[in-house]
Length: 152
Image (cartoon, rainbow, N blue to C red; front, side, top):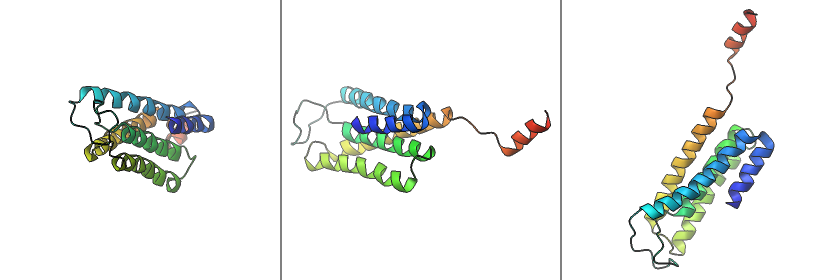
């Protein structure tokens, strides 16, 4: 959540609500969806390192939320010209990867929990990117501008 707040706030400050809103929205959606999926999925035996054995583990909320926010922030910041893909893409891959691997290392999630989180997070990021593109103002082509100028 703090990473999402910083990314959304930065995008909002630099490029306005059109850039900041998708990042904030995907963060809220990822947190909500992680909770809903954990409640809806049939419980299974958690890994030995899980602090609360009664708490559901699928999908990994850390993997889901980190991948959704990192991928969305990278996409929006790149499309807005705030950062280049060479800056954002490595971070957008490394942060979720580190989060998921950390959960595997401490034995808090099964491998499938982490992969499930990545898949759902990526789907959320793709949805946020599509919504961002739909909300983005369209520039008229040079031909359309020329036609408009000639009909004046």
